Length: 238
Image 1 (tube, one colour):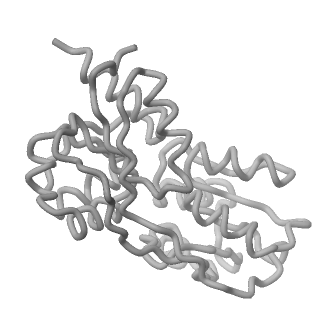
Image 2 (cartoon, helix red, strand yellow; image 1 turned 180 degrees about the vertical axis):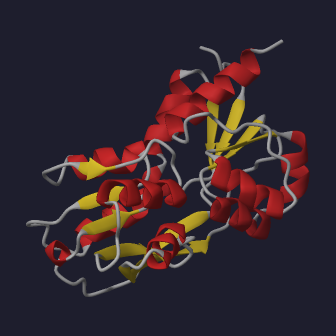
C-alpha cells in the first residue's frame, strides 16, 4: 500500500467524496475528511432540452442537479467535460455524448466547433453553477451560436471540524474549494506550506497560482483516480 503512513486531507464536498476517500484508503492512506465546500441547489425551470442542438454539462455537480430538477431527456443531445461526468450521463441517457480528452471548457467548445463545422445559428444550453468559468459558452457565442446559461446550483464555504495540522498532503478538486479552504481554515497557509498541495487539474492549478498558493502535484489525467496515482508516485519517490 503505497500511501501507508501518510495522512491525506480531502476537502471535497461530503456528498461527493466517498469514492475518492475509498481509493486513497485502498492505497493505505489515513484520510481526514474536511469538506470546506457545500452545494446549494437553485430551483430553476428548464426549457425542453431536445430543442437545443446540445446540452453542455461542465461538471458532475451540474449533471446531478440536472436530473434532480426532473428535466425531460427525450431527444436531448449532450456534451460534457470530464470522464466522470460522461460516465454519470451515460448511465442515464441514450446516444453519443461528446466529451473531449482535455478536461476544460475551451476543449469542449473546440470539440463542438469541430463537430458542426460552424455553430452560427445553432442553439446550446448550459445548466451550470454560479461560479462556473463559462469559457465554452463565451467561445460558442463568439462563433455566432445562441447559448442559454441557466443557474442550477451555488456553493458556499463550510468550516471543517478536523485537526489538519499533521497532514502530509491536502487535496483540492477545484479552485473554489481552495479559495474556501483559505477562507475558513485557521492557519490555512501554514498548513499548506508544510504539506504537499495536490490539485486535480490545470484549471485548479491556475486558481492556486492566482491565490498565491504553491502547487506540488497536478495529475496528467484530471480525475480523482489520476490524483490518487500522482500522490502514490510522489510519496514513492526517493
